[in-house]
Every structure is written in C-alpha cells, then in structure tokens.
Amino acid sequence: MKPITLALSKGRIFEDSLPLLQAANIEVLEDPETSRKLILPTSRADVRVVLVRASDVPTYVQYGGADLGVTGLDTLIEHGNQGLYQPLDLNISRCRISVATRADFDYAAAVRQGSRLKVATKYVAIAREFFAAKGVHVDLIKLYGSMELAPLTGLADAIVDLVSTGNTLKANHLVEVERIMDISARLVVNQAALKLNQAPIRAIIDAFARAVVKA
Ligand code: PRP
Image 1: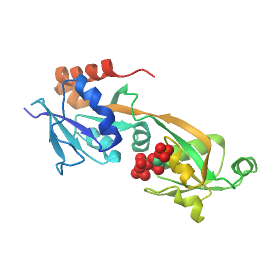
Image 2: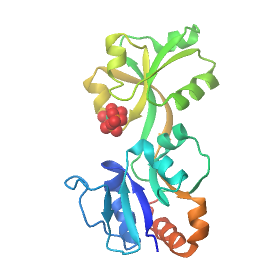
Image 3: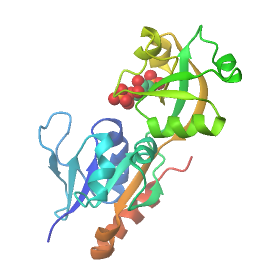
Image 4: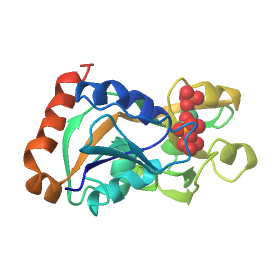
C-alpha cells in the first residue's frame, strides 16, 4: 500500500512541525538541511515526508501528490482554498503580514489623500483584498523575494510582506505602518485521500490536534 505522504517545506515550517510529528510517532530519519533527498523516510513504514517549496505545498496536497501538508496561512490564501480540507490551525511559524514603507514616506497622508500607491509584494491576493477593502487605489508589483529593496530603490512606495521579529525591516530602514493579518501554519489535507485512507490519516490529524500548543 502507498505510504501516507506528508508535504513539508525546509526551514521554519519543517523545524516547527517536528513536535507535532513526534506526537504522531513520526520521526523523520534524515535531516533536510544536509540530505539532498526530496523524499525522506520516517520511523513509520506507512508515512513518508516530501520536501517541496513552501508555495508548492497546497498544490501538492490539492492534486494528491501529497495526502497532507503544512503550509502558512499566507501561502494558503495566495493559492486559494479550492479542494483543500483545513482541519487545524497548528499555531506554529507565527508571524504577521504588514504594510511597510520608508520612514520618510507619509503613508497616512497618501492614504488620506486617495493617492495611487505603488505596492510591491509576493502576496498579491492578500494585498489586493486589503487595499480594496480600504478603498485605496494600488498598483501592485509582483516580486518573488527581497521585497525590502522596492521602496529603497523607488520601485514602490510600500511593500506587503511577512514580519516576524521586525529585524529585516529595521536593517533596511523601513517601518511597519499597518498590520494586515496574523499568520500561522495550517494543516491541509487532500479530501479524496482522507476518504480512501480514513483511519490512519484521521489518527495523524487527531495526534497533531492534541499536540497543538494553544495561543
Ligand atoms: C521573511 C520576510 C522578511 C523576513 C521577516 O522572509 O520576507 O524578509 O522573513 O523576518 P523578520 O521580521 O524576523 O526579520 P523569509 O526568510 O521567510 O524568506 P523569503 O524572502 O523567501 O520570504
């Protein structure tokens, strides 16, 4: 029988997921930081982990390349929720999504005066919805990383990006001018896989649920 496949991304999501995996008796047998493998065996013969780009986790789970996955709410919103069962807020990898500008940019005045803002971001769906709800006109510029550079080079007036400690903004002389939403990692499950393989997948969901540390 095909093993249950769990999609994770390297880095913070992987690290923060380890206590949850442990609660489901799943120990990943190789370190993704040193191994070049993309399919990692676990201590359970019936469970394997696949390592994918963070933004690809919902895609793998939606189309059945993985049965379950752990993904940030930011990624989930950008992907769209279609077809994904989302049973749990795992309350890990917490951060926020915010608007940031150069310290010398008068964001409040620009918003008040109804100026057209140039906003650079990887999170275009979140940014579009946020500014539309405020009635602010924006030109969205899609970037794939290093958003902080955009206001510094004149590419944009503002960015919409993840903020955790705030150190990246500070190091680049940017200020957080508005918080859009709190972010945490979510468990996503392929609905067909859950129907076909109900008992073991449900057991993993339940073990994760018991191990979630409440806010
Ligand atoms: C995120 C985000 C910021 C940084 C914020 O990047 O894009 O650059 O973290 O963290 P801080 O407030 O603690 O400084 P990440 O490292 O996730 O990589 P990314 O650029 O690929 O999004």
